[in-house]
Each structure stands twice: as C-alpha cells, then as structure tokens.
Length: 157
Length: 419
Ligand code: FES
Ligand SMILES: [Fe+2]
Image (cartoon, rainbow over all chains, first blue to last red; front, top):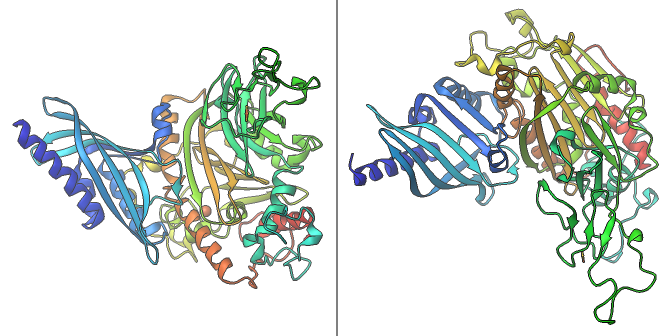
C-alpha cells in the first residue's frame, strides 16, 4: 500500500464508522471490527492511572452484538441522535499490516425537544489491521475527557 | 426576603408539603424545593450523619490524597505520616479558597496557591508567608497564632478499608449509626480483606439525590424496568429475597438469591422474559459463586445519606451520591476487587462491570427514569407519589413485592427535617 492510498483508506474507514453510528444501520457496527477485536469506552482518568475499569468493554463480535441487542431491545432510554465530528488521523506507527492511530472525536447528542449538546469528547486509540475485507479495527479504545457522563451512554461512540 | 439572606436553617420557616402523617405519599416539593434542599444539606449532609468518602486503598501512602465532596462541600481525604486517614475541608483558612483542584495525587504538604499558606496532612497550619513582615513592615498582628487557623477537620471512621466522615463531631459511632442489620451486610463484603481499586465511572443525573436512594430501595422495578435482567434469567419475581432495614428506617439492604434455572412458569407475570434468548457471548454472565456470599448472590446496601454498596454477582462497587442542587446529583462509581482475586476473577469482575455504571445494561436505565421522574415532579407541584406496594408501614420482609424501604427512608427524613 502506498502512503497516500493508506491515508485515504484510513480516512474512509473513520468516515464510514461515524456514518454507521450517526445515520446508518447500527447492526453493521460490528463489521468494522475483527471478530475478536476489543472495543472500550474508558474515562481518561482510569486510562491514565492504569485503572482497568471501562465504562463499556466489549471483546469480540459476540459481545458487540449483545450490546446492540441491549441498546435496541432491553435498555430503556430517551431517544437521541448522535453526531461524530472527527479530526484528521495521526498515524503513530505502521508496521507490516498493523497501524496504530489516534483520532480526536467530538460526539454531539441531540435529544427530542432540546438543542444539541456536547455529549462526549476524547481520542480514539486505534489498532487497525489490513484484512482481505479491507481495514478493520483490531482495537478501538474511546478514551474520553468528560469528567461526567451526562446521565447515560447508550449507543456506541 | 432579600436574595442575599441565608436560607432558613429552621424547619419552622418552611411550610411542610406533606398532607398526612405517613411516609407513603411523597409530595413533589420534597424533590424540587430549593429551601427544602438547603435544609437537607444542613441537617442531613452536614448534620449528624456519616457520609462515605472513599476506600482506604485510594490513598495508599503518606501524603496521598483524593478530593471528593460531602453534600456540596469539597473535602480532601489524605493519609498522614502515621498512616491515619484524615478528611479535611477543601477550604483555605485564609480567604476560603478551594485550593485543591486535582482529583488525586501525592503531596508533602497542602499548599494554597493564593498566598502559600501551608498545611500538614492533619490540616494543621504550618506557616504563612510574611508572618513577621518584611524589614519591619507589615506582617500578622501579635496575637496571630498558627494553631488558630487549621483546615476544618472532619470526624473520621475507617471500617475494614472504607472511610466515612462527618462534619459534626457529636455524631454517634459508625457501628451504632449503621445498626446491627446493616452492619452485617457491610461486613459481609468488607470483612477486612485487602481491596484493590479497579477504577471509576462518573455521571451527572438530572434528578433529586433521594431518587437514587429510592431506586436502590425499590425491588418493584428490577424485573420490570431492567428487561435485560429478566431476558437473561438474572431476575425473577419469586427470587428468594430478604429486605433488611435499620431501626430508624434510614438504611436498608436488599438481598436475593439468583434462580439457578429459568423455566417458563417462573417467568409468570413478567412479559419481558424470552425463553430462547441467549447471549452471543456468555462471558457477560460467567458467574462464579464466591464463598463469602453465603446464600445470597446479590446484596445492595443503601447507607443514608450518600452511598450504596453493591454486590451484584461478581461485580463490586461503591456508588457515591454528591448532590448538586435539588434537581441533580453526581453519581460516582468506584469498582473494586480483592487482593486475593485470581487473574480470572479480576477479569470476570471487569467484564461484569458492563452491566453497571452510566452505560450499564441494568443501570443506564435507572438514571434515565430518575431524570423523567424529576421532570414529572417539576410539572406538578401539588402531586404526591404513591409508595404503597406492600402496605403503608415500614419493616423488613422476606419478599420483593413492597416499597417498604422507601417508606422507611421518608419516615426518618420527616423526623430529621421536622417537616
Ligand atoms: S486564600 Fe489560601 S493562602 Fe490566601
Ligand atoms: Fe435499577
């Protein structure tokens, strides 16, 4: 892969991921990951202090599907839209087929009857791998800056 | 009343919103009124009640501190050189500055940046710059004494690794405060074993702080709101359970035993049960019985006014309530395990943590319903809740179909608030 086309492919992966969560089919969300990938949403406080607790920690497609089932069928919550605004991706390292990357994100939440609000902001710590089906996340840690989650966090970010 | 006037610290200045002598119908203003809230801070959070502050392991060495709050007052839990835990109010004795802004850290002394007043780990003032002036000019008056200006030091009790504090030094001892029933539940988890810290989750819930206490004293809702519990067989209406309550009615514990097998007939009356639903990944429910549980797989203990101790299968946490006005509170989850845990057990506790916290399968929805209850109270000041499942009285039970623990808390609340 040339440097340019790799950058383009990563940018497309990021954009498609955001589109999936904001406007697309939630059911397609696990497809962005390798089958045993680790997805975590973790407060920066825990991350920096090496405390292992996550707000959400899903390992593999099975747990991801279980989460989607929970989101859609069992967890009662106020309906809301979310919108991801992403920064350029910083490629930290690229060895063989594995890329370590960081992308800043801002997620806005819009509830019914209310103006949009900043819901969650942080950095994606990604490990991206090349697979026959294209680039996938082998690891995506959403390390968020918010000290407080505004009530609850339902959808993946 | 001028806007600068202090809130009435005297209940006689507040008209009671209650319409009867009981505690089964709670009027909206109990959740929304600013003057009632101010009186709660005074009498409950700053009065003769023990508040949870943290776990001893959060401040492992001399000079290690953690900043937190009791009511709306910022406090610092800090370990001194003798190894004792102090809880000091985060308010400089000079000009009141809340000098500590970090959540946690380690310091030689506590220094207020404004004018560099310097305090030791016991809150004692060690020195102030220019006390004797500069070249004969200025300085503190002759009668200024460092001893007269320490940080406000709270009364502290540490029980098996858990730290409680109280602004009022006349408070009864912690053991008496908890009472034998609740003490037994507390000691079941905290029996002196060394704890390990797993981390924090923090959320702000836009509802009155008491709604969270009610939520954990309410065994009516889990099988109905938390569809996830029922769907995957973790909760049944006929689970063997016990509700315990202290003599005064202010604390409580809900203990129950998880059903070993879920079959159709036990799901009676619970529409959300789905016979053939299974998880794609069973690690979420990879429950391993621990010796110390005894016959119960769940024990949720509410200690008035600000903490819930959670043991839900293998997941352990303290949930601290920090009120921020009558219509919001911060909810801080501190997850922990035991030093003796195997690697697998630690992993299991962390995986089961997906059920809890602001994103939890069975607790994200608690925050949501609290928000909407608060909205309902705001729109109907004349409304009273109906808390009469299982009758109108207060007492322990051997079943889950009751709101008696909530009535207990309000019976006590009315006494203390004189409303
Ligand atoms: S306010 Fe703290 S030293 Fe002056
Ligand atoms: Fe609940």
